[in-house]
Amino acid sequence: MTIKDITSGRILLSLLAAATLAFALSAQAQDYPGKLVRVVVPYPPGSLTDTLARLVAEKLQGKWGHPVIVENRAGAAGNVGAEVVSRAVPDGYTLLFSPPAPFVTNKLLYAKLAYDPEAFVPVSVIAIAPVVLMVHPKVAAESVQQLIAYARANPDRLNYASSGVGGTPHLTAELFKSMGGIRIVHVPYQGTAPALTALLGGQVDMLFDAVGAGLPSIRAGKLRVLAVGSEKRTPLLPDIPAMSELLPGFTSMVWVAMAAPPKTPAAIANRISAAIAEAVKQPEVAKRMLDLSFEAIGSTPAEMALLVRQETERWGNVVRMTGARAD
Image (cartoon, rainbow, N blue to C red; front, side, top):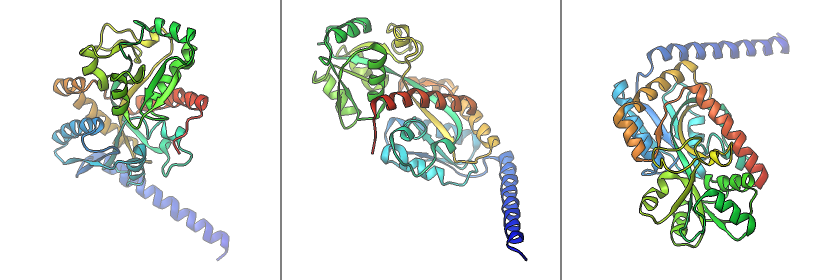
């Protein structure tokens, strides 16, 4: 037997093994789910992501008649949990429920990851919340136009808080600076809570963050909202203009999505996606999400894939412009 024969035999065995696995997974898709489903949340218990995941998991469990448990694997901006799911068997019984970081921004900010973000199989964009521009009442601007005019006349006079380099508040503010043609100073904090506290205390002038973070203070008149980052106005703040009305093309939002391990069959992803869409369209689920400042979506896998591509392009441009790095 020659080396060529041995090599050919190994290739044939590999192809047969791959075909056998594909056939087995395809057959499983017909009966999915048939046992416990594990939903990995790469953030701590009690976080907003965790709350949303448990809301969806409860509805999926009721529909499927099998346990759907949430497992928190926090750490490294979502990278720990993402790595766990990336190594799971691609049979739909281990899923990732996460904000954009493991899908979009981490691959832009980290020089090396222990998983391939682009290999995840998209399942569904579950819910979306707009980012809003909040300013302290001391800021003499009642609109975005006035804010930009002041910043242009006074370069580096204004500052903005963020939850840290590379986070949504930081990247959104840098996008605003670029599109508005202004210079404002970045003041990073260790997380959203201290950044919001600094804004409320007047130590900083402005903050971009998900609408839910500052909504109680906004409604109490302690903060002023100048614009929302969604393409259209949000029902949470119907009188506040969308930033895109003033800066066409500006978009910034926070979203949570479900993805499956690499090589998960499309049939399984589609089945899970359909179940999620049915769950989030239930009136009580949509209302609960709105109470948490999120709009229920329940997208298809193709729609999620498109959003990931769009977000990667948008924030990739900002990361390259700023040189932001997370390690």
